[in-house]
Length: 548
Image (cartoon, rainbow, N blue to C red; front, side):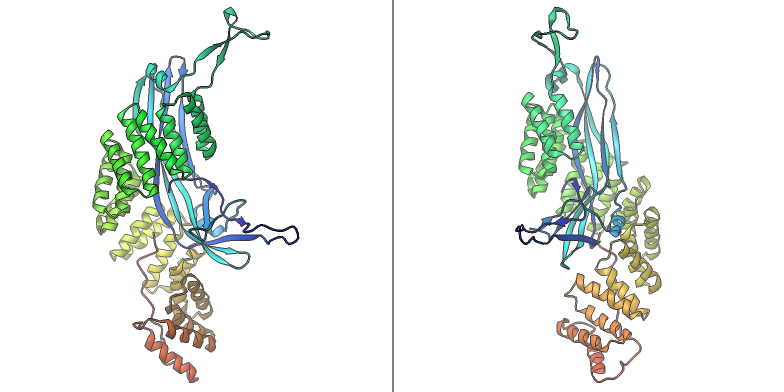
């Protein structure tokens, strides 16, 4: 999914109509905690012109901003659910975990060409997007998952620039030109000699600039309207077709945006410009799930412009999605040869190396990315790889670096807490897992391992609460009943312990290592005997770390 702008976070939702006599109660949902989080890089390419034709000098800039609450969206219930939307507030833990209201963006000034020239800049806007699932609770007590998407940061870069003479630009772009109008019937103002009044007409370029402004504001419907008006004046303007296609893509109207990109390809003024439109159409095909056409278009973009870095990057991402990591790595390598100072390129190639099983190469790429742009997420990802390789000291160092850069980076607290738990450092594990949960990162692992750490500390009530939370997230995990039974014993609640053990024995798989202990413990409780042995707990080994 490509960047979209939504004005919401926590929603009031009307589910049915009401009668005048008996109004239907309003159902309000609160998104209270994050369950999973993933990160991806998305990009979109524009063509912008800067003209310097005699007295007409245009200085343009492009900007992007991310990290504000208007760009966060939730959808309750997954497929077929209801998109949440208006007058929103958000639980502070989610705001801290995602980094809401920390605006991050750039403005890129496009240099003015020498007099008599027009520069066409091919500019890529790149977004770092977080998405995953959160837990939503209604005022009726109902719980549901909520899918979310959030733009974390964005950056801009010039991919290519083409120079054209002003005359060519006038033919294809439509400069502002005065036109003659009939003499006014009454006076009231100076007029040129001969009685003619000069009128400045609205040109396609004027409409294009207005449409681009609406686009930047996220008003894609109005942008489409203005782009369409520009095309009425210049029906073969490739840039306008491309921009309208971008707007349609933001509105998820992929058939319309593909049609516009196809028109842009037909009327493109140069191979480099045509490459841009092929790449954008390829991205739209990818969003539709038409993988082969997407790959074909990215290949066409590269054929038109072998130095078009974004086409290699986009094709690499698609290959990685398909599991063709070798080809993804090859394309990311070409991309980095063309754009060696792009930190995100090293991050993406590192992920491909990691998925291909070459963890050392992935670590080297994360290290290069950190040298270019130290981010909490990059340290965190490198720390996960050190953890996989068994280098626990470096893993802990990277989690600490991530938290030094962003003290609210919840995944690092979770990963460090799991590692501390595995090292039997239960006090530290409880502190870090508690911090992760308070920041909205209370996923299954956080509650499970904090609960077991509480058991090791003989904190029965706290352990019961955590295992109950874990059961809410994974109700089919039979082992949780075995753990909670032991926690109930610490609180003195023998009957609840018996109930949980009976549930465990009914639902546990036949190869569960806990079955003998559970049977012995249940028999002791039913016979009113104290449990034998000091500790019956057999704790699991945590996974390498939380999901990406």
